Length: 203
Length: 203
DNA sequence: ACCTGAACACCGTTCAAGT
DNA sequence: ACCTGAACACCGTTCAAGT
View 1 (cartoon, rainbow over the protein chains, first blue to last red):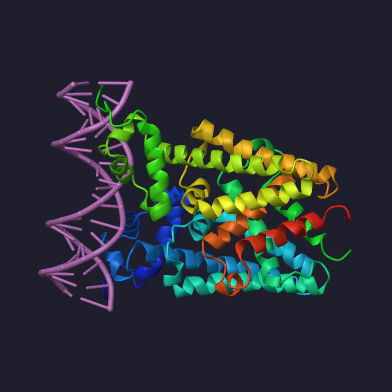
View 2: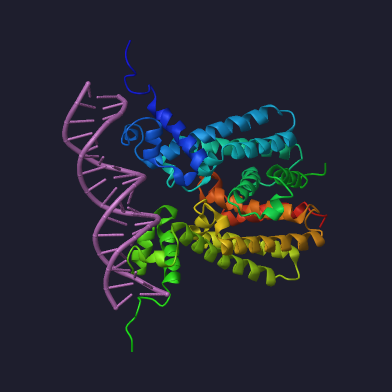
């Protein structure tokens, strides 16, 4: 039987996992290629066999994060196939939960850490695919008279933006504790979503 | 008459301005203390006479950015003192304009570049003061029946979050060009704000 | 094909020293 | 009080070399 010929059969994924772990423990600022390599048990130059540069690793981590987010969003939609309002509500809950359970990954995914998204097609693809799911929910809600009949894409940006903005402002410490002591993230988000839904046709 | 005794009378502010300039030209990734020092015409260690570390400089830049944003927001409010709906609309416009005209500063202000906001009281102060202005607008709108009677702070987070999220998603390249080709940032934002206003008491 | 180790340019930070 | 220059540890990236 052969020794572990090259440490892993799959160093590429090991590096992505190592990156996610460092991110969750030390935040965006703590992510260095050399630390990732060390945690994966290889030399500091080994990553370059799998990633062109640090940006590429970040793109891979962000893409992986988006895939997980997409999966949870999709599950929330499927579980409420017959109820558009609940799709929006539970989709929002999935988004909030993902952010709270993956703060490190969430921050890189939406920080400008990735400077030229265009250069990473699979990142762009999953990111756009996620947006399409939001558009789907919006259209279903509009068809059910739960959201106003504005252009669905604009409505989707507004809805996603609201979710995203609330979470971001809180995560970045921009919201004072006098507010956060009284309401938790989900309370704020759910009130906001209800507010959007109430602007549709009369219930 | 004396020579310029120490390069500037006010190296501290010169460093902040240099930082803002680099940010606008090279983005968050290009901001290094050594480049800032060079641009200000001093040695790489001179900044340490005025800032404890890089985080401190970032805090100072962010604080300055917030002050400018606050000023524009305030102007928009004062110019529409008698009309809460217009305060919200024009406040949103001011926010969007600030972001578009100061992309570099805007990104640092709201990126996790500043890792321990708590340690910078004047940053926390202006940031909270800005939030208070949003709360003011929300309260005025609620009093005028233009926004639903949810807790004003929650409503303020929702409204600010929506604005902020839309801008962030667009700035981070998360919104596909098939959408952005049809609608510009302000169109999306204004439709969103109108949507929020429409959820208030019947016009 | 996959990985190592030396090397280079650059960065943040410290510190003794100069005015 | 305000600034310089040398020094140190750390980083991203490259490259010749090893299996």
